[in-house]
Image 1 (cartoon, helix red, strand yellow):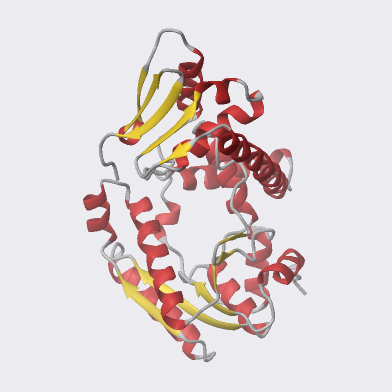
Image 2: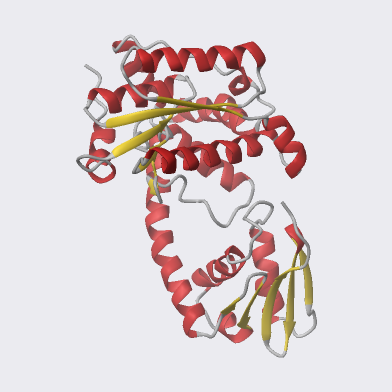
Length: 323
């Protein structure tokens, strides 16, 4: 019998008695297994499926499959159709990012409308390992803690479960599932990591994915503690937050321990309405250098952000709207 012990352990924290869960279900083996696991352990659950409008008849088949899976088990089913291609063009982002935006908007709205307490997604240990590698490769200073088991109403009960364990669970329980052809396209960075990098790491250690995911969890716990220290220093040091402008005395950053300076810069940037995309370690370092420099006073940063040092004060401003 396949035991999902890691999921059961997380369930004690994420699934209190009487909770109403909306599960995000694409039709793939991960989300179908999650829905089945929640339903069979007696959780009050509904399923939400977003049709992205990208894969024609294949996507229609996904919707029909998930709907039938729910109907045969008496699980409430909610679906929405989106034009992710048009959304990507309008926002000027990739279809991958537009799909994520549309998906979470749909899930949040549906949860509110039906009164769900939690939204469960099927992220697992391999996803967490891939996320950490992706962030390292792109030079990110945040996100090294991988995927959070819970953020707001969103929960990931399978975060400690490997893809192999999920596939074994599906096989044991006779769970059919759908295959999204886009997940096979290595033009997407995450697919390349999944199909090319992770199998090579597994030849060095068969538990590589699980070990990387465990490291991400450790980094997340330590990062949350250091972020709290960084936030305290900013608050006590006189940081000021506006809708499109944040300021802090340069001395507050310069006098902070090295382990906190970059985090303080990131927290300041996080307060601006631009998101984290396109910001890397070199941008954080450039802002730190600007605070210490006697010469430079201005930096142009991604997503319409500028950094200025005047009178010993660092100001980060949004000078133009970037989506």
